[in-house]
Image (cartoon, rainbow, N blue to C red; front, side, top):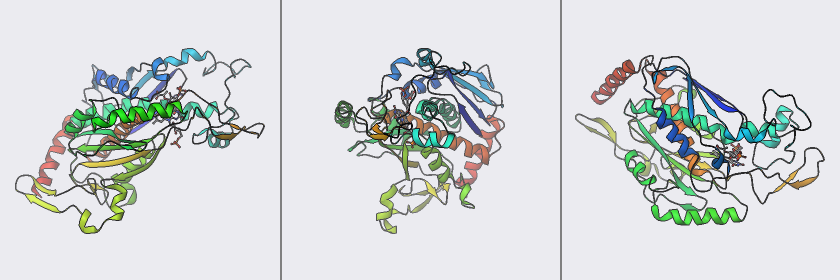
Length: 388
Ligand SMILES: Cc1cc2nc3c(=O)[nH]c(=O)nc-3n(C[C@H](O)[C@H](O)[C@H](O)COP(=O)(O)O)c2cc1C
Ligand SMILES: C=C(O[C@@H]1CC(C(=O)O)=C[C@@H](OP(=O)(O)O)[C@H]1O)C(=O)O
């Protein structure tokens, strides 16, 4: 399975192609659109989301709502493109008029300066447009399709906001996806502790007033994964490594850990190894899940638990020092319309890219041309594991 997206933040549209989905998967497009709507939400987002109302169109690979086995192609239009005249036209030649809104004072922490050096762009808008997290719209659309696929295999996952700035909001750390879902959708910050919503809102509002920004920590839990996805045999077959790469591949993600995470490094072995148990009928299990459901780069049948750290948003309304790429004079960085925090949206993106990686791992490991055959094969494999 492989996917690719194309498109600029203020260009005409975003486009994605995913190859390798099995034939016979029914796609609920309303559910995809609900996920896109969620990605646009969360307290702390900027004004761009007032302009957009993301709706996906499926333009290939699906007939009568069911995948055919070929590449699936998706499109989401950028409404904001209409406000940019020819500035973001893929076809109009560059003129004095449509090359306005140049970005020449790179923002620290964004891709602007290094992207300009690497691609030899003198208008850093050429970097901004593709490095923008607008692109994550289609990762969420694809990821929702992957989640619909995983559900057909009795696998479910959810990501939520565990911390915003200094405010932690998951005093309990549930391992059950349905329980988490029920709690986080009671509030617009997607946190478990309802009493932390108010302090987080306050923190975001005060931060916005100061022209500053926030990041946070996202936690993801997946249930129903069979033991043995991924492999210990080579570094590049380890599934935990692939999940980590997918997570850090999301804009602004700076840290990944599994299970008890970095705390594992501070404990004794006796405190963190998940002891092995066995029961007739269900087979092997672990008595705890400190290691987050991975041993030897393979799922071990326990809930998958991942933690992902997002840095604060780089564009500041009280900008930091930069240097103009033409005059080389010190200036304050350019200000582009921006979010104060997008941690809720980011949690949806993390959920999506991890769903895609898990779907990929399953399709690599089992015969996956037809969903029905894959379901049969997975049923057999799970039975074999229970009887081991
Ligand atoms: C959902 C989402 C929304 C984002 N919104 C903004 C934003 O409004 N302004 C901004 O400067 N960065 C935003 N970012 C972060 C930048 O896209 C990111 O920091 C930048 O591409 C540089 O990449 P890096 O942080 O991975 O190094 C957002 C990230 C995500 C995941
Ligand atoms: C457009 C989205 O996020 C954007 C991500 C982003 C960035 O630099 O990453 C910068 C902002 O772009 P704009 O200047 O158009 O408002 C965000 O709004 C989105 O998530 O749909």
